[in-house]
Image (cartoon, each protein chain N blue to C red):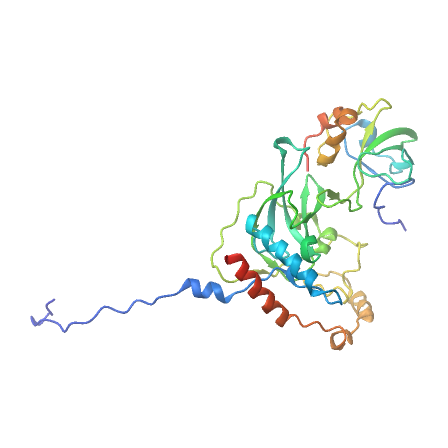
Length: 246
Length: 122
């Protein structure tokens, strides 16, 4: 290369490439499905160990994706009474319950102005495919209040196409405040026992203050109710990830 | 005040008629109520026949969905749905828009005509 002066320019080495190791970043985030964590109690840990072995066996054969409450899933089940023997249902996951092999999740959708909820068992051999269509965490762990919300918040198109995921890292949290139908509701969601952050309460201030009468501020300091799962989770995570990689 | 919607269907539950029959859709000052359940227990689940009191008349009906959670993998509806039926099992309406559970297909012999009108299945 020749400068404007006519003399050859000093050799400048090319800039070093910045390597972003995506595999390392992926490993940093661990997700352990909540049904692996054993509930607090006096049962023999052998029972949970055997159950975990069965769960891992099933996961090797059939892929259960990572999902939280608030995701939109499409589940195809084998049904002897359906056309083509397979039944596809799309819905938003309202709650995940149960531990071990009996773990369930409830999907809700509104079809033709009729709200439908189906409770599926994660490890049931009847399930043929679970696809995550929309990845979105919500502000709460339990979206049961969608039953008393306006139906537009629970409608999802049956032929919805899966929304592509941008990063392999964070799951976006949707801070949507849901508007409700007029009272009466199936449960009094304004009470602090449910601790719901995802509703836009349009109730008068007096009612909100009255609801705070039922608050139990001593609950969070109750030591007998503490259940620290961090160590158990780590052990189980190691066990599960080793088995799955075999 | 009015009691909340009953979960499974028994005597005196208010029901929602789901087909497009004239009897089910014309407005009346009293909602259609169940008077009798044709069952050993008085509780009606999906696929049971009940006797309905609509517009001052007695009509038989078939339960297609209720608010009570049933066995896993079966749908649970947000309202107690019912299809009006004659004594011999022929449905009165001509179309059913709301989704119907696939479990009704197990008794295809009795409900073939109702299943033929239904459009959506869940």
